[in-house]
Image (cartoon, rainbow, N blue to C red; front, side, top):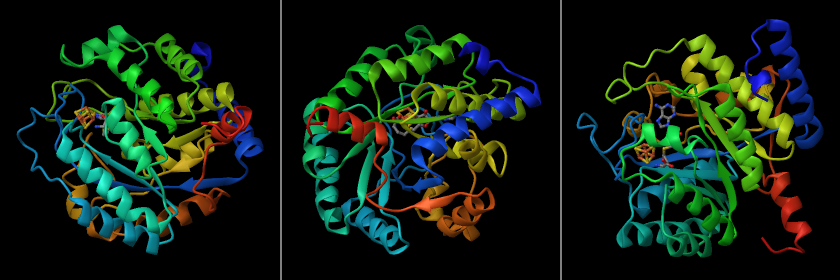
Length: 342
Ligand code: SAH
Ligand code: SF4
């Protein structure tokens, strides 16, 4: 896999993408599942060195949606035809936050949306409460499977081991579990990325979200050099190699790909991804939720990302898959192998 991730020639890289896309077509069909991404708050207790909304970034105007605002945006997403939502924010561990999310989940349950949460590290008890309130999927990127590299990208009180333990707790609570990494991190090698794919397999995850690392100007990693073309290519090769190794997992084409080139997410689909997550947050708050530089779709004309995504996917011969909120085939196989228990 490290050799695949190091390919450079157009022809070889093209063959890698074609192989991954045919596995995707054979396993998931010629279609892409859409999930509406709701960025519900940029308040974060963490201080990850790479992230634009890290606690120490005093330049960010902070916001935090309450249950009613999230319900209103979820209703708007359902009215636009979404059957699945990702609710993401900075990390907050508190009883009032846990209760707000719980209440929100119960309020949006009648909409029948498949809800994915991406709210960071929490106690197993909190994960269980949110699962019981109706969330079905959880995304928690490990960021890198190398504990040493993780240590260099986070303050000393951030723990790689706890993140792994959270992924295990999520499984015990019955979620479809997603993880992922950033590609192109300072000091990261092709071997590290190959190990990341093995980590996904060892953890037996159902979904993967991977994207290129893009330096944010107000972070300690602001001055890390980036060659956008090479970074994009690395992100795409990582999608392709993961599809070839894992076959039946859901793989998202991250928005960060589109920060590098306008058609970045379509290229992710052409390299084997089967999920895209158009933004359904209002544009005013989207602007306050900038994890990396050059976030796309920030002006008013981008109020509705769905139609745009539909056209973009049609242009590459893909359609949007509807239906019971796009469970990963890996998850369905995993559950049926266990006689229905998740
Ligand atoms: N707070 C939650 C969810 C929001 S952050 C969490 O951390 O899990 C979502 C993801 O954004 C992170 O997992 C990270 O992989 C990604 N991210 C943060 N900063 C980034 C950057 N500079 N470039 C690319 N991706 C970044
Ligand atoms: Fe917070 Fe997530 Fe950003 Fe880390 S990556 S600072 S946990 S929002």
